[in-house]
Image (cartoon, rainbow, N blue to C red):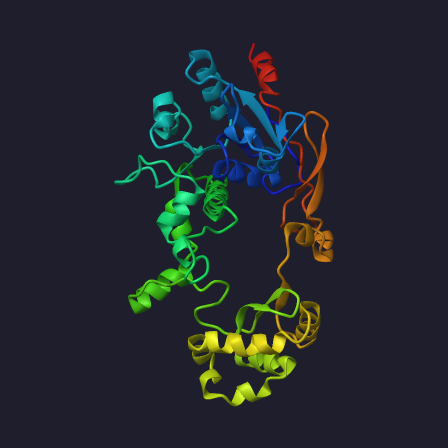
Length: 383
């Protein structure tokens, strides 16, 4: 059942995935991109992400974007023969990944305690909203609710605006990244002769963990960080500015870059203003500084300022849509956009592995599986 890409770093690693929607499937895809052989166990009706549009030829492009390079086996785990097949497959594997509510895998008879004595080398990873233990362990959660509970929404958006979430599902994918990193770390221990173990990945905790700058601000001041729109709490000018025709961003995170911005904008007199004499003072007075700079930036289009700022060495960028971001020459150089063919034959594209190994983009398998495409082969292989 397991076949692999022999040249990638996780070649030969066998993974069984019991996951739906985003966090767990993203983890499994990261492992597959690095050469692991991932078998996705789905219920007979399939991963619910298969129903999310856009759908072409009967397959969701959302689903395809998180499940490339995997095989799909459709099993009813409440039926004993299918449960036994799933157990046998895990016992042949190196890794199990699941993102069900705590208790579900135990009720099915697929929990860590069942496998621990039978296969001590197994790396068993559980991704959930709040973790496997504790007062909120039994609660479910989605990216939106975790962004709210973990504080992300409290620092996202304009100061007086309604609550908004980060537009990218940061809680889902942060959990998937932490899970993949933790799995790879335990695999290194197993390969060195040690045991596997149970990895508990709470989305709530991983989302708090990436907020190191916000939590350290709270610990250091005793005050909740606040929403600042595109601005930065400790640096200025460091946000979006309006030119005569459009918005753009610049990030002047030190005094040298601030001097460059002032020279480009023709506002060198502001360098002598005591309110803007240091990064801390500029941040404290950034609303006034924004208004003064926007008066200057309003005299020319965004493209003019971006060209001048780049020449001066100031990090800056237009506010791209995904069409523009994917069409950037740097995206082409990094070979990010890959061709993909859905199981029904529909041609599309996806973003491949963003990491380069020894200067090369990994040649990932972009093929997403049709629901249960590998079930028959599995059953035949086991008689």
